[in-house]
Length: 508
Image (cartoon, rainbow, N blue to C red):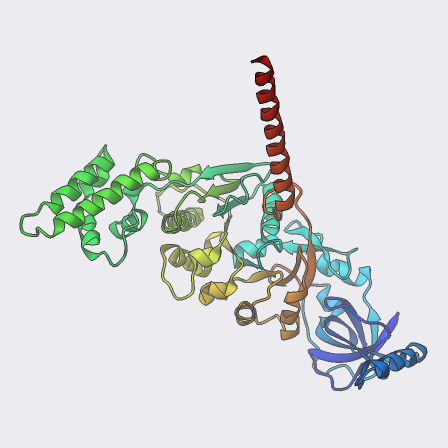
């Protein structure tokens, strides 16, 4: 059915159209070009009224409104449409943009389920459903899981817009395929995710396996505390690392270094380091475990591994994340070498199949303008991981604070509601395939709506993400309801207490 016509100046990738009804941003249409049908995406929609165009006061607006209502030609529906390519080629998985733009007067048609279904709902095993097209809700939208593992993924949105729901959905789908997923859970968002094949792990750090600088971070010794840093470095000897009583050996060695008669000024700093050691070994006893020789062994292949790092301080979480990323990358390299029949490597590896890693609060661990252990290894995986079957996903509500080099290597993006202009600019520079008009729509998205772009989808898509019922935590708190319950309980306790007092008085 014809719903409009191309008007004005046309370009191979962008046209203007006048339509019989207002089109929604994110709606797909067919441009019935003489060279073949083109698929277009509505990127901007404008409604204007000739009668109400130049109004200066209320009375004039009232009169113009009455004129507009009786004039069927008064309303104008103008649309900016991005050309995605020839429909037939898109249905085969190829995007070919026309060399010559559609002529003014070319009909605009409604896109049917037959037109769009093949593109957005492929029937191959690597494609899995995540929701439905926002403007065409009868059409399922699928994403290619192979692409996020080989080309990485970023999920970006304001708080409360559905990031953790999408992560949970991906976890559910990967788990159903016996895939291996690791979620670094910084705020205990996923411990209650009730899906099959969950493996809940409390992150642990073996201090024996760290270098002196990293151990200083774990013990929370300040970077500018040069004397304390030097004392720890001198005390952290191979003998201490191999000692059966690690903490006692380290403490004794620090005391020994601090007792150097030639550097009497070191004694106070050594005492401070010993305080740090004592504090860390008791306060973080469940996390800093010198007897856990292989924390990576807790990760199970073919499971959704939820690694709890919520109990760690920011520096400790950074160290733990860096350690796991480093070990995973090294293991996958060894695994890949072992598959080569000409390889002579005898090193053992843990994982034989691809692994996908999700990092929550990515702006904390991969910050712009700051070097961290986790950032180094995340960046290395973003560059090299695809060769070894190790994919990385980053999740954040502050895209502007993420290292731009890492973000730019994310081959696929899910972008939900984002209001801050700095965040929008960062996304725009990281994803060239998203237009300024689509970026401008980020402020109007509702909870659960997302723009999907990149290699995990055949075409840019505005999608409503399916809600994961198995996830409980993450929704907004009902403060009023909880306050009400609390007040009722307090009143019941108060009334019971008064009743008991009255009873005691009567008995007296």
